[in-house]
Length: 69
Image (cartoon, rainbow, N blue to C red; front, side):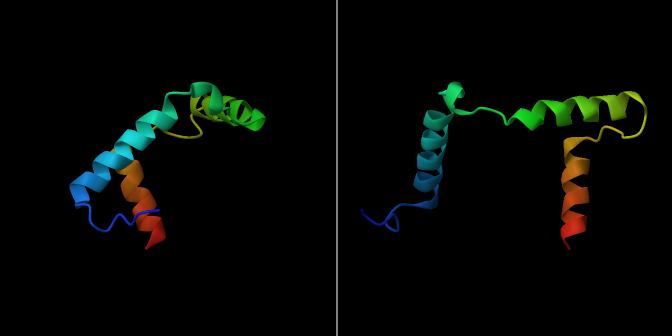
């Protein structure tokens, strides 16, 4: 296999995007695990009961970053 070191950062990112796009076109390949639906229903119920709150994506990322510090 040829090294990728000769590619620019932009070329590498474009290549990664093309690979990702190709991989994600076959949705049948991405089967959610059986427990995933249960967890989603549980979270939805907790939200409906006021036990958890919805966060803006930027807020959620910041909270996660703060926890990892």
